[in-house]
Image 1: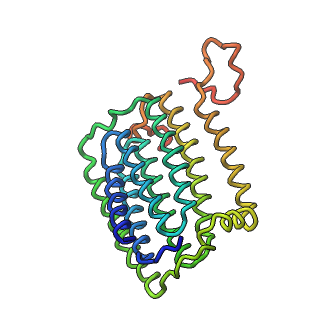
Image 2: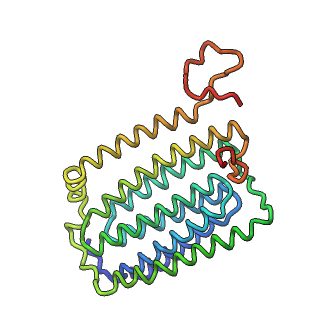
Image 3: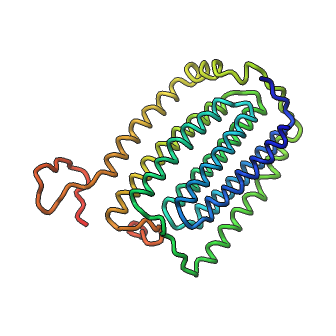
Length: 105
Length: 183
């Protein structure tokens, strides 16, 4: 049951930062709506890793419970967002965000 | 041993995350996201949160990714995103932003954790019983709010994604006042 803590927590935090950066780059460069959503999920997961890492570091379980809430919010966000994409696709036959400029100006 | 596991799965997570971001086909990108999520589940177990790891597999890899795949299947956009050039400046700016983020945050995180070291994992920290006790006592209100949020999200998703009622013929079956949008 007891794991020796041979891996420093800071490594996990660095991993979280790298994953978040990859997610940011993806959200900025993807043009497919679904791709942007995947990048956002990546960023949420990076935040989760950081939360659990600090929870481990501080010996406090609040971070883990926060991760539970983040997961629920991510599920809600994915459901609503994908529903929006379906509605948009029905009208415009595309979800390429460069061509969805109806509400831009 | 833990270091080896960490390095293997960290490399796997980063590599598949790059696949998520760069792969042209959304289906392959989603499948790479599954690999990332599984690797992160391993990370959670290494950090002494096995319950969160299990939830990661069940909720993320099991439910959310399936939702993504379903929508991809419904919309049939597996061969979208034909690259037009002129996007390169955009791409470099995004890379620069991400690089700047890493450059700013990594030293910060490293310094924030440097003096302290995590204590040994205790039975009490890992136990799901204590987790549930915290969740249903200290955080009960937040838990209920999240439940309400999920309910609202489900209702909103069904309302938004529903086929709009046939407007031109004034179909008698169309009883919904929402989204009477004329295309």
